[in-house]
Length: 432
Image (cartoon, rainbow, N blue to C red; front, top):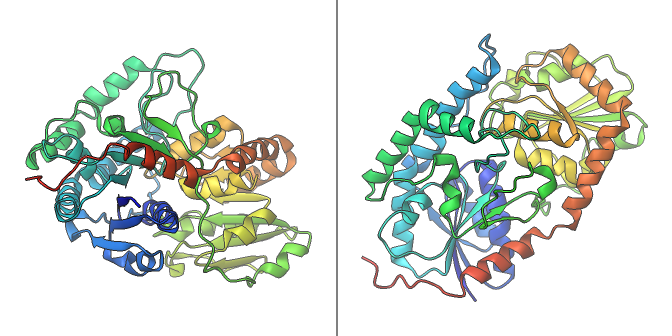
């Protein structure tokens, strides 16, 4: 039996994959402690893990829904991306590091597995303290820079035969120089060395990076670091899902089933995508729209729910997605991959966090349509739905990718990676 410490930034889309990994490791007989927010205590307990609680300073405020703007999309993404790098990756670093070190001082650990945003682990990698092996779990699109891909965050799919090295250097050293300086100040504040790589490249320094997707949903790159492995996508645990959903009778009516979601991160204004979609398809008797708020306040919907729609908080995807014809989403990494796992083409309208990057990958793989905005019009949504339904190429591409997802065994791959790095554990008993 090994002893593992898992750490997850207390954002739902980051915690749930780490919870699934921890639950699987417990089933394999390992001792697992999960360092995350207090609000996940019950879920951690049900999964058989021990909880270590992150302090308040390690928490990240919810993202406000993107507001309409006349600023060019690239500039808008730059300004928002800079703010989000500060709030998600840099502001919690010191509190994450202190909490991580506290657990490591308290108990021996064979390996640590953290999500991509848990930069307290970067401080561990760059400090003089003894440490166990550290693995990073890629719960969003691959952030690592490459000469063959545009800088992460611009939301552009790569063009063949273009060398992006100079563009990436300019973005990192000029446009985001203040961000990197803030990162290094945060590292210095906890006694760690300066980062030798740009903030979004920090997983290069880890012992392993386990990317939660298949190669077919990432840009090809010949300069991928040796420590990166694609392990596949983790499907959600449906043990607590209802056996019969209230919308199940609509699945046998012959109508086109459209699923729309704003996920769990950028959903403070549901009218941004849910409301627009309901208006776009309200007169389509041939369609039935199933919408999820992801916990967002339904009162922010500024339109009545039409007769051809059903709105709820969450959905049992294993029941729904095999019957869905098109998914409309603001680009959550997990949600998009859930759809593609079932061969469902997607329409993406999102700009916050990594959503523009997810949308760009959807367009690049031909598995759906990138609307290029977080505020599409009803007309744009209706046109995109018609385009998906009339062109079989989207569904063919989604089915091709679904075979890749089905062939992957992510939990086995993650367990094997942890076993591999723990072959030479680093003792911490005498640390400090």
